[in-house]
Length: 150
Image (cartoon, rainbow, N blue to C red; front, side, top):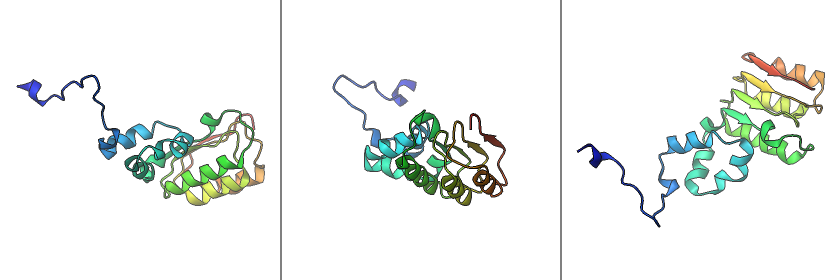
C-alpha cells in the first residue's frame, strides 16, 4: 500500500515540467544561484520562474562578488546589483559586492537595506573611506564586514 503513494518512475521520453513545482521549492532552488545567474538566466526560463525570481525572499542574500571574480569594473553589474537590492524590498540581510563596489552603490545599499547584517567588499578599490563610513552609520544591525585586500 505504501508504494501507491510514491511518485511513479518516469519512463524514457517523459519529461518533468519544472514550471509545475511548488513556488516554495522553486524559490529554494533559485536562492542557491548567484544574483547574476538569476537576473541574466533563471528569470527568463518561464513565467512561473520569473514570478518567483521577483519575490523578496529570493533576495535576502545577494552574491554578486564571487560570481564575477576579478572582472574589470563594469557599470552593468552595478545596475544589476541595484535591481537585486530593489527586489529585496528592504529584506536584504547579506550582500557580497567584492570587486566592484562603489561609494554610490554602498550608499544605495545602506539607504535601502537597514536590516543588513553582512557586507563583503573584498578586493574593492572603487570606494573611499568616507563613502564606506557614510554607509556604515546607516546599517545599525551590521554584524559582519569584510574589507580584505581593499
